[in-house]
Amino acid sequence: MRTREALTASRVEWTNRRNSGQGSAAADAAMAGVIARLEAEIVALDQAIEDAIGQNEDLRARHDLLISVPGIATHTAAVILSEMPGPEVLRTAREAAAYAGLNPSHRQSGSSLDGPSRISRIGNATLRAALYFPALAAIRWNPLVAALRQRLKDQGRLKPKQIVGAAMRKLLHLCFGVLKTGKPFDPNHASATDKTAATT
Image (cartoon, rainbow, N blue to C red):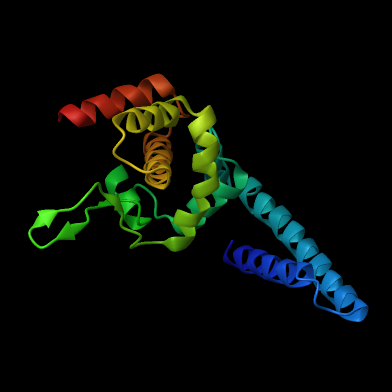
């Protein structure tokens, strides 16, 4: 997964360089060749990742639990499996969020709090970045994440980017939940769990 991330970053870099339009025809052809090779390597790695998951019973079971959460597909599941310690290490969803740097961090001026909280960004940047686009999808298709987004929007305290950060945290909580319980995503069960935790 780390190698795939590096190759993807290189592809973006070379694509941007080629799109700048400052190279000669020969330079453009060379850059197109580099991009094509990078894309081929990424495709090969994607297949290797799918094979590794499919050939390992434990990985396959945890992968299937993760993709049961609306918003999570195979690529994001693979990042979670490779970057986040399991429930045997991280005991709670809050610990998982802190590990990814998605835990709330209050802005403070002197001795008083100044404004709403933001994510801390102190944690696993690879895991955190991998949840951004899935969170945007979950805002549309995951009923619990969509409800959170609407609730925060109605409160009017957070900016859109902060709401996305909260959605990322919620999505990771749900992923941790299915891994810890060993049961596929159930919006009714997950919602009941959230309410119980809130009153405990």
